Structures are given as C-alpha cells and as structure tokens.
Length: 287
Image 1 (cartoon, rainbow, N blue to C red):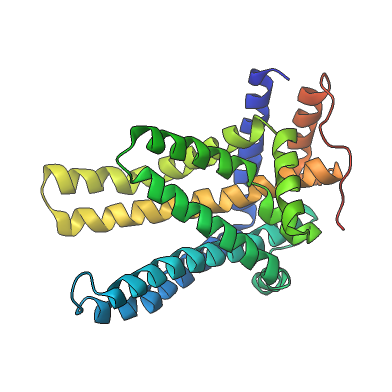
Image 2: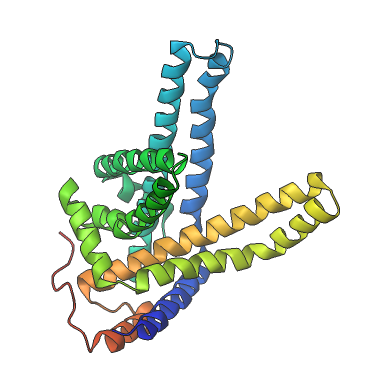
C-alpha cells in the first residue's frame, strides 16, 4: 500500500474518532480519572521522601528508600495509566457496538483483567526505567539508541491493552499479537498517533499562547503558569481519549473485520487502501 493511501486512511480514522468523542464525551472521564488517581498516588508515594531528605547524603537508607520510591512511582503510574486505558478501550468497544459509555462497566472491564494489566505495567515500568537511565547518560550513542528503541517500543506495544482486554492472552501472546496488529496497520498507527497529538496541541493553543505571552513577555508568572497548566491538561485529555478510540477502532477492524455503522467511513477507506495488498492477519475475534 502506498504511503499516501495510508496517510489518507489515518486522517479519516482520526476525523471519525473526533466525531465519536464529540458524540460520547463521557469517554474522556477515563483519562480524567487516570490523572486524578495518578496525582493521588504520587502524593502517597512521595510522602516517605520527606523523611529521607532529613538523612545524610550517601546514607544507605537514603539510597534504598530512593530506589524503592522511584520503582514504586514507575510501576504505580504505569498500572494506573494502563488500568484506565483498558477501561476506555472497553467502553470504546461498547460505543462501536451502538451502546452508550458507562463508567462502572468500563472499570469492571478493566478490573476483570487486572492481573495481566499489572504484569504489563511491571514490564512497561522496567523498560521505562532502563530507557530513562540510558537517555540520561553522557553517551550520545546511548541517547540516540534509547530514543529509537523508545519509539519502536511504543509502536510495537500499541495494541497490548486491547489485546489484554479482549483476548486475555499469555505474556508472550500479548506482545506477539500487538506486534502482529501493528504490522497489519503499519502506517495508519504512527500517523494516527501524530494526528491525535496535533489535535490536542491545537485545542490547547488558546491557553498556551496567552500563557506564553504572560510568562515570557509580560513577565506575569502568576497568570502565565496556570494558563500553561490548563493548556497542558487540555492537550493531554484530548490526545489520551482520542488515542484510546483510535487503537480500539484499529484493533476492532484488524481482528473482527466488522463494520459498526459509526465507523463505516473508516473501514471503507481501509478496504479501499488495502485491496491491492494481502492482509497480514486473517484470524481474530474475541477469545
């Protein structure tokens, strides 16, 4: 498939995903809850650090507690993000089936696969720690490799959560299935990710632009910083919600090849673009 065709498909996908979000704004509750619980967890874990700060630098207790806190932060935030993303994916699937999103059902759906989600969070946190350690080194080669591997890791694991929610796979299967789905939607996935990030940025500009003016030109940080925070929150909320809708719709198409009415345009475009190339995946369905 030519790149321009994949680009058109990704644009169609993002446009329809925006339409789904407008029609079902309650889907945004899941990223909101993810942020709220993430902040609460951050405060809970950072509390022991107040005591650690009073210890002498280099003290073994300081080192042990510091490492434990960093590990807990990575693991906890990874699990919270994964949990509410799973809830969003679960209810996006319900929306594609013609239902209204339900907060409780989404949380119940994520809770049903809490074990695999925790395993995924542990793996994701471990990889994140390693990549951060490499990227913060003085080696330029290491920093480049960390950036390249980080992008590849994000793309190849893009479908892990939908696979966990709908298929309940083994650890090995979750990675194999996600990689296979990415291969099947290669082109649409990265372009769609860039598209939802761009939409989030555009939506945040009304807050970011005056915030930048107040902060750097008018030198009014008390007014500029809050606007920057609001803009960042808007961008994160929109991009997170749209990302969940995009990955669910792509998963839905690649595994079931069915056509919810709301996404007819997307799947028609995918069929048209892929008619000249063999599909990389023929199986699917929920297990």
